[in-house]
Image 1 (cartoon, rainbow, N blue to C red):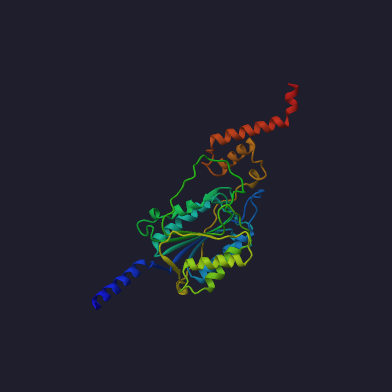
Image 2: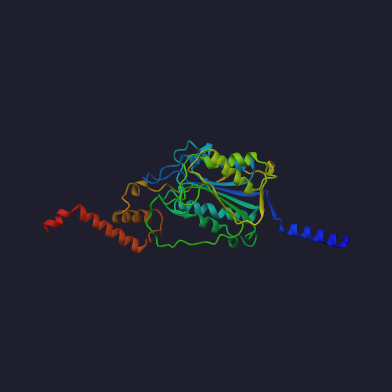
Length: 343
């Protein structure tokens, strides 16, 4: 009888062990921070000065407090040593993002990182980050760049990737660039890719820094040894709600099967922040700003501007161009209808 009880006890222990979720402790994450704050003076894209402060506070959190290696692509004003340099470029273009991503992925290969934390700031539209040159860079493109197949053979999909997105997720910003006929890809979100959004899909956020302040406040003050990442997200959401920021409604999409804990790295092993230098001059704003969005002239002028500035981006969608031409002709007919009467 005693032997039966011993067998039952062993089975109960094995059952509880099998059901217990795996714990993962992040001790050496690589952090990437991308902030777009300076936009052309377009009626739908206002400068986001708050992004500069958000990037600075995020650097202080991840590099100074957690001691994680940190890479930054942002307005040069986030750096005190070049803040007063009026000749430094402030705008972030799509080509800068492409130059930013590859060294980060290469660093993951070269060094023993156990996680990637990627923060995005700027204007958002249709689940995309809007760059200073009006390009939409889809959030799924960032996730796809660091998915398991692109990290094989060193990590695969075992590496935690946490994306923190502080942008609007509504559709109130119209299409600013002409379509190029490239279909939007639907990427599969694999395991261990988690995303924390500042708000739910379809809504906007304010440029007031509430979301980042809440992240800083919670992660600096909770007991990291007993509170998991999911616990921290719950505390962040609560902190945002208590801040009376009605336009924020954090959403956490987790694909991790493990319970994740963030730990501070030894300060002695902290490295300086790596800033991506913004190469090349700023694009000529006068050729793209204040041009009516619905006329054929816009497409013609922008196509010429793009051909001069970025070779290879003039393959506009034929249907969109024909539609714009029709709208332009209609506008001319409405404007000069009296000529048609005399004819």
